[in-house]
Image (tube, rainbow over all chains, first blue to last red; front, top):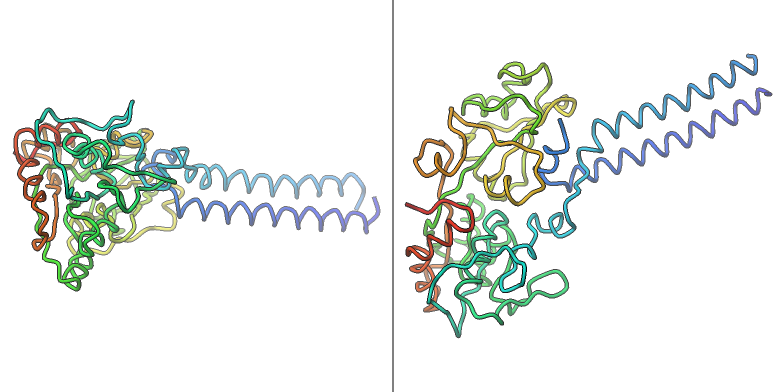
Length: 45
Length: 316
């Protein structure tokens, strides 16, 4: 694998990873704001 | 770098992101996922479950000969008390008085539901004749005063304000002082109250809600604080007994407080320290003649039996 190809793969994975992680965190914050206190306690530990 | 090492680095990067995202999902996202019905998520109570006059409804019906007609008092109130006031309508109102369209009660319905914050506004504005709630907070009283509304609050039943934890939490009870210390940040770990070495996530509710107003009074001026590390531990919240036990999907347990478990026996005999009245509230200047009729009925044996049927403790 050439260094150029390796660099591109790393860049794509990093970009996708940041997108997915960012989306998951945004979704979690959104859910946290709307879920009921009883549901939150029930679904936790 | 050789090809094998490059592939290893790529796999490591993918694994790092996947592991991190799985951890976020497992620790945080999953517990925020509310699997209750859309109606429950929207209204905090399943209106159809207690809808008056509907077949299969769990709305209670008192054994009474009272039947209101004409200018019917419009009822509204808190989520936790919806089974009570929907039961009132189901027992003494005519069947054609409830109108529910597109997921909400219409303006001409005798039964409304806007929860505590909406109900206090509605009674002050004159949009509701009688509301069923816990006591108001200072802002709600100030709003009523601004609207020239003197509110009459008639206790019609008793309910317990409860602290809830996940049913897997080994802690079964706390003292009142421990609860205040937990919610003010003085106690940060469950190990300090007989539980595991895990942080405490002390939850809170929105200002103006019945449970938050009650909690503010319980805290007696102490500020509620939340540790950012609590999310890695076990959470504790608060609600009203009947709501937490019967109007949700389960998975929580109620804590004993100062040695008394919040069941109907301990609420009735006063040994549970946070048992308090809930009220039928109306404007003193309301000239609807059926308002005092309904209030008197709620305080009668028949009305109190409805309160008991709905799952609450009668006032005596």
